[in-house]
Image (tube, rainbow, N blue to C red; front, top):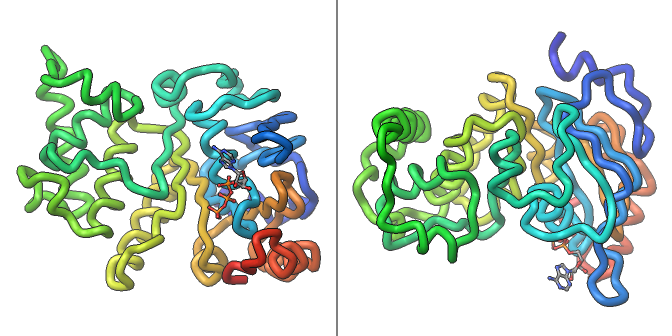
Length: 277
Ligand SMILES: Nc1ncnc2c1ncn2[C@@H]1O[C@H](COP(=O)(O)OP(=O)(O)OP(=O)(O)O)[C@@H](O)[C@H]1O
């Protein structure tokens, strides 16, 4: 059954159960000083969907991504990917289990070639400091397979002509494509994209959106943070709205877009910036 059909009969209620959840989040919280940045009681993400996470600036979207992918430590909580517990695991471990993320500001290493950036993606997700420590890199017997996978992704993302150039020479949009390609090197089940369209020139936005829907159509579950509500409405199978760290609304895109709680959250966004709703 297509993802959107499976969700059509799901109640638009925060924390609602999904017919076939791949990711299940329980009681995840993170505070910075006195500020509760994330406070998610229960959230399920349906397998094979594009699920957008929206919310005013400072709502906790990026922090939630950081927690789920092990780039920051939750104060409390549990989450599972296909039943496997992922809390208290490091990013590379979570990537190996099948969940990867991209960053708002791309992490391409500008003094390395595009192909080498991609090949590093296959080593799981590690911090930049650790990436440097891994150089010079040794692939051993896996090298051919990894290189072929990287080349296929370069073709797919139309970056093959930049293969041996330094990543620093890529445009902002091409870096976003490289970032997405790099995340795919581990053949994830779930990919979290943090504002993949931000700063991308309009000509590339459609192409990026095409890649996102292709991923979903191939069975990858996509969770993505996006501010542009036209994009959210156009591409999402399901939308989750955070405000002050908590899920205040979730449902089919139209239902969330017209939910008074969501509109109030944007109008009253505590940074005074209502975002794009
Ligand atoms: N490392 C940190 N130290 C202190 N406060 C932080 C830290 N990271 C995030 N915060 C705060 O936590 C809250 C949630 O931030 P977060 O970046 O997750 O929001 P967001 O919804 O992703 O916002 P935006 O849409 O603007 O990117 C904000 O008030 C932010 O200032």
